[in-house]
Length: 360
Ligand code: ATP
Ligand code: MG
Image (cartoon, rainbow, N blue to C red; front, side):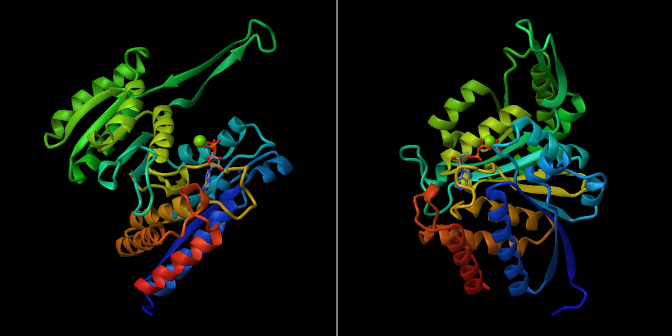
């Protein structure tokens, strides 16, 4: 073993429900990959930030917690959400502060049909659906602006103010153009609702049209979000890279993941492209309270996140080995119930580890 090899410090935040089960298995896979490759070390630091912690202490993140995350190369996140805590409290208590405070302003979601899986769309082959969705990750309806007046009366008025800044739009769109440029089809579709939302969404349109001439090789088009849902279902092959607002990107990526087979297999990367602070990798699904504790959650989405995390840290060989192992296991039919299999979380993990051992 090389004594000067790199050691990565990874903060792991399993969170709630199936998050705990899948992060545990993902760490096993990464530890085995580290042993097999022998080219880097991974040091995991576990953070018990969960809804249970919130119920016991009144906070998800302790004082100084966000600062301590900064001292890592990346963050691996499971899921947050509990039947005992309102969803807006858990989201604003844990995930959103991390995304905001660590400057993770883009969320990247690759979507494709893994070998052996099938789309619920009729006649949709692996070649027909291969997208990357870029979701703006810091603004819009998630800016946290708004309030309620006359609360508790029949005259209650609630406002959620969607905030869009030129700087926020531009940095996300530049990132999306770069991704589009790096892909074989070089095609970027921008999604808004600029017919109804006549300020922020119109600014999105404007910035998009200003940037497009700087990327002459990238073919562009623009969709309203409602029409976009139809296009994703009826003409998946016409899409390649997609850029959308925080809220639209959230909704469209759940649809996209379902079209690619299951939300259980879809990864997402909350990136800080400046690399000033660590990025965070989390599956797009939630804590799935309905199956938590049963040991049947699909771990593939989180394994794929781990592969994206390795790539972000520059470990491209590790990423491709892990992706190959995941694909090989899916193709061989070792799958959880959500993707038409009969295996449990542990069995899928074991199969991925065996595939890595065979390959390396
Ligand atoms: P969030 O608000 O955190 O996004 P959600 O309310 O959208 O959560 P999920 O927790 O993602 O909901 O669950 C939606 C459905 O998908 C549930 O029926 C759940 O069991 C199923 N599901 C989610 N993730 C997985 C997984 N990894 N494996 C199998 N089924 C899953
Ligand atoms: Mg959801």
